Structures are given as structure tokens and as C-alpha cells.
Amino acid sequence: MVAVSATFLDGESAQPYKVLVDLLEAGLHISASGVAAEWPYDEIRALPQEAGPRTVVLYPEGRPLVRLTVHDADFAKALKSRARHL
Image 1 (spheres, one colour):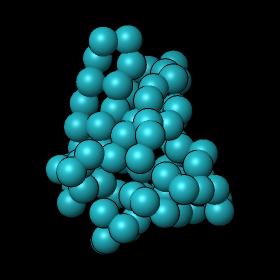
Image 2 (cartoon, helix red, strand yellow):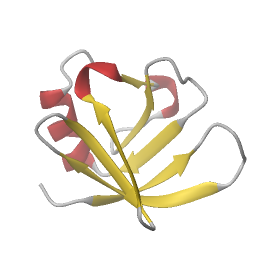
Image 3 (cartoon, one colour):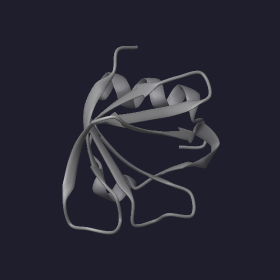
Image 4 (cartoon, one colour):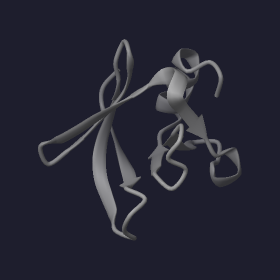
């Protein structure tokens, strides 16, 4: 799958960051301006009440103020096939 654009909130500031996200073998890869992070699939949690049919809102387990919002239905479907507990 090709990386898609997303919005990232770091849980510390109100500043949203534009990032790229990609689905790798071991987890979700997030990158922006030389900074990269990987969230293992089994640690990703979703906020369905903040999502829609084409949108997923995610956070890493244990960091409930961090948010990653992706507006891509194909990405959401592919993520759910890897992170089955979503």
C-alpha cells in the first residue's frame, strides 16, 4: 500500500502536524520532516465515535491524548485487516 496523508496530534500541544502513514509488516509507520515512529498493530486503538465511513481516528495504547486521523477508506480497510482488534 502507498503511504497516505494524515493529521497527527502529539498530545502535548494543540498544533496538528501533517504526516505520512504507511502499513508495514510489523506496524503503522508515521513520518514527517525527518521524524519517524512506528506503532505496532496490537497497540493501536481506535476512537470510532470520532470517525466516519472514510475516516479512522487512532491512538497508541497508553497514550490516549495522541491522535492520528486518516481520511482514506482503503487505508482504513487495510489497517483493519492487520490490526484485527480494531
